[in-house]
Image (tube, rainbow, N blue to C red):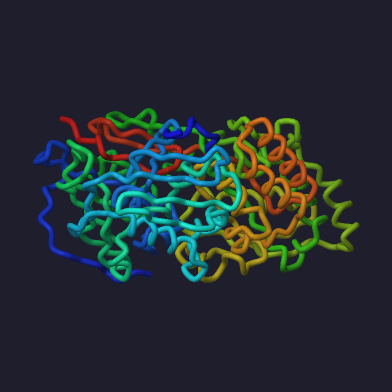
Length: 507
């Protein structure tokens, strides 16, 4: 059988400068102009396999391609793979690569590059966040220069879907060492320069493999930490796009002249990470008490102004696998929370620091909201502020209690397995959760292509999370962007990146 699969259930660098003559912003040499996008933080990695933050994911989509691509409606289509076949048992996947696709430095892409790219992602030494998604891959073969075969240890019907994820981009096998400073991809835009604290500059790839694309002359990702500065620049016409608007800004800009605002439901989530290796959250009764202390609907209103919805896990309420039969309490129950804390042997207040990320205003507001709402139940939370850029080195997997958030993944499996399975790559960086019933549900969901059976397993997982919480999944949050009225053919993607191949600046 040769086909693309039907729609699946989705879900400090140095300054790097190289000379380039870009058109002035707003010019129209290739018909599109230079699109200026405001973002909040510096990129930490230019190597796509190592990227972990939203700003980096936007860059990945512009400079690189994957074997498959996820569209705005969350369906999968071919990208560098022009077609694929899969065996009846869903354990052997064969991909036919496009011919004539060239990297930015001029060499043609071949199967050797694909094999090298995936072996890097799967290498534990690289510690790619996407590694655990490919644990089922037993072998990768390249029968010829334009064919790649993946052999899996178990059936996996969503394999083509996960090839559209953020980190699994195809890079040149012979320029791996240059990825950190002079990356070369096959994408619609060429890397030109990056100055931390200022901007990343990309230019139109004149040899891009999709005819007539891109239409833009270039893209600039501007680093502007303050949202007020970003919005002022957008309204003044000094920028064309503000990425990741705060929910409080959505209402404000909807009434602004010459501005278009789009807010879309996503599977992106924010929450409080409870480290199971450190007291007091090594006791399930304390974790459950916190859930009784803080009602999620109150959090959604206070933090998101309604631009989101409570959830049990990374599965959002908009998804058919969401467990509506597992109730989310509408109101806090401080008395019940105190009883659980007493059962855990805690007689006085639970005094614990909560780390919040400076530079992520929604998550900062989430931390302060949790601090205030949890107090009546006996949680005395001390807020500690750490710049988001230092989170990976100083906070993740180390602090007892901290605010974190993650973007939507291409499938429910990739949204849950890495975060909640005892061997999950993100679990190792977060809560160190170990619940055999959750492991079993996640493993069984991978072994069936039947959506009804998958739903049974994922609902079972969510039931267990209600009994034994990994942490505090606060909500699934909408994703919003603001655009100048002259930005054409650009839509807000639920995966929080941009597809700018057809975009251009109108009059």
